[in-house]
Structure formats: C-alpha cells, structure tokens
Image 1 (cartoon, rainbow, N blue to C red):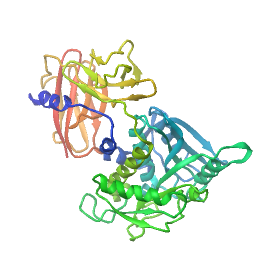
Image 2 (cartoon, rainbow, N blue to C red):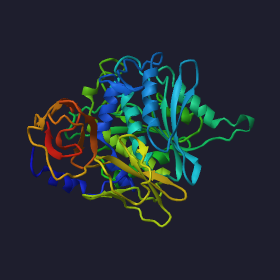
Image 3 (tube, rainbow, N blue to C red):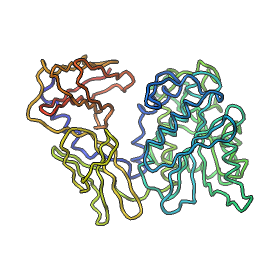
Image 4 (tube, helix red, strand yellow):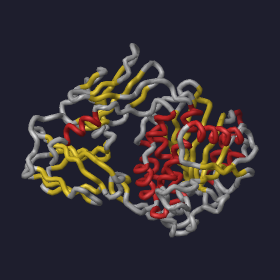
Length: 464
C-alpha cells in the first residue's frame, strides 16, 4: 500500500469528468481498450457475457450466428436513447438496427454500419473490426442529443450477397402504397478497418481507402471526411478510390441513389490483411491504434453531420459530493447508481452526496432533451486505511491477473480506475482470495480502491 496513493487518486478524480460536448470531445472518448475487447469477443478469441452467462462466439457464419446477433443486440440495448430492433429479412437473415431519434429534424437520417457475419471462424478483421467500431461510436453518441437521426446498423449475410443491407436499402427507398422514401443523407460503411502492414504501434503510412462513386451526394461525404482529417488531428492518410468497389454493403445504397462511402484498410495499395476470408484472420495481427484512428474519424463525421445539441451532461467531483455542471433554470436532474443501473430515489438536485462508495451518473433534462453523464467512481473517504495484514494487492507491476487478499472477513468494494478516472472494473466480494483479470488492459498506471463501511485504501498499480 502506498500512503500517498489516495492523495494522488484525488488529484486525478477532482478534475471534471465529462462526456462529449463537442466533436473533439467525441473523438477523445473513443477507447482502444473497448475496441480491442469487442473484437476479441466477436471473433471468439475470448468469452463474453451473453444472456447473463459467459459464452464464446464460436461462429459468425450466416447459418450459425445467432449468438453474435444476441451479443450485438444486448450491447446496443444497454445504451440510452436507442430503439433497438431485429429486422428479419429471410429465414435466417437478421439485421440489428438501433435508432437514435433526432430531436429537431428526425426525418433527416445518417447511417453508420458494418456487417457482422463471416465466412469461417475468427475473422477478426472481416468484420469484427467494423462491428466493434459501430458499437464504440454508439456507446459515445447515444449519450448525446442530436438534431438529426442516427441509425447504427449491423448487417447479416453480407458474405453471401449483401442481402441484409440490400433489404434495408430497398425498404428505405420503397415508395409503393403511399410509402415515403426515407431521407437518408449519408451512409458510412466500415468493412475491414483493422489491418495496416506497418508494425502495430509504430510510425507508418496509416493509409486507408475511401471508396466512392459519383452517386447522389457521395462525393460530398468523401470531401467532408477529407476536411475532418485537416480539421482535427488524426494519424491517417486517405486514399480516394473513385470509382470505388461495389463489393460491400454501401453499394446497396448506391443502387437506391443514396449517398454512401466505404471506409476501410487500403486495398488500393495492396495493404489488406493477408488472411482474408480465412480462419487465420486473428486479432493478434491487427493494428488497434490504426483502427482507433479510423473509428475516431467516422465518429467525428457522424457527430458533425447529426449536429450535437447543447446540453451540458458533464459532472464534477470533490471529496464530499458530485455535482452536475449544468445549472440552467429549466433543467432537472436524476442521479443514477451505475452498479445497479437504477435511479436513486429522491436524488433530484444538482448536487449529490453519496452515502457509499460506488459508480454514479446523472441524467440532465430540459424541455426537449435528456443526456446521461458518464459513470464516475466515487470513493467515500474513511479516516482509517487497511493495514497490510488486512488487505494485500499484488503483484505490482502486474501483467495478467491482479490478486487481492481480503483478510477482513467483510464485504469490500473494489474499483479500478485508469489515470483519467475512467472506471475499468467494479466488483464487491467477501472472499478471502480475489482475482481480477487485467490481461487485456492497456499498459499504464491504474488506481485500485478497496473500501468497506469501516476503512478504505487506494493502491497505485503499474500494468505491464
């Protein structure tokens, strides 16, 4: 135990922790750890919690991908402000569609999409990468109020004829029987966005393709992406391919005269995964920093075009309480216990004083819009710390499994935060021996806070 660790932790946690209020904030929220974990789970390289139990997605082949579909549906359904539906388009085929309704111009629609089926086992790059990027962008943008509608679409049966996207695009364009054509203003399709021939983590060309054709306003989407590359700092270099390939889901929107582009690794320069359409397509061969940059770029496009509305969903923390930074006269507040995903009865003021350590967020609402803040770890400071005979945390540094010896006989809350204050682990246990898997966490400094109703200690841990 490090005697100064609580003071160090408080230094970081006293800084405002916020969700995105600007396009740059959206970009900054994209997490490489989240993306990497999603790719590993979707490709079946590590188990995931699905239907309440640990399961492994052994297949995403279109005849046997129900578990993958459930995984995606559950991930999207857990987010705020999304209406999630399964769109069945034939006996086996099912698209997962999550709609975030615009607040002022709901009929104007932007789609961010990827296919989730595969041709064989694993297929991490094709296309667990695209799906993971959509899920990560949905995680961030679903907390925001936007002017226009965003659709997060995960297509099935891309590998056997682009069937899922074809069905959706035809339905959107159908004007028979008095139907109105959907006003889809732009489609960004992400297919294979994780492979770059340069060694992962090293400086390289970081080239990627924008496949486009002069259909509807597709050229304008390409131009907007190039402008964003010059407006914000991305470690990317764009290769414009015109006429672009028709061998992915965006082309089905071209067929219906909608504006669309494909964003992906650079096939144009022969820098695509060498294990295309094989079980050798594994997560260990991907460049997740490169994939993160592409995810950030697409997130910035959607945030810009859907138009973030101005409501402040940020929160601040001091040693005693949490407070919503929004102080508008017409705003209302509801504090939420993130550990149980439930509202806290009676906690409707701008300032909230927790009575126990935990993870908390606030829902800020005005007359037209509601936004929920990020979950923030709050540690109720006790005057006493655990002794080394009561609580021991090791090894330090740690590479894969962090161990906690709990000799108190009490229930203890365990929170792990990264250096920015983001919660990466939360649990409660009375066990004498506790193990926490940190193998897939990024290298760096973390703070492990262990607390009971009597004592609390924070440990500074180095993850190798």
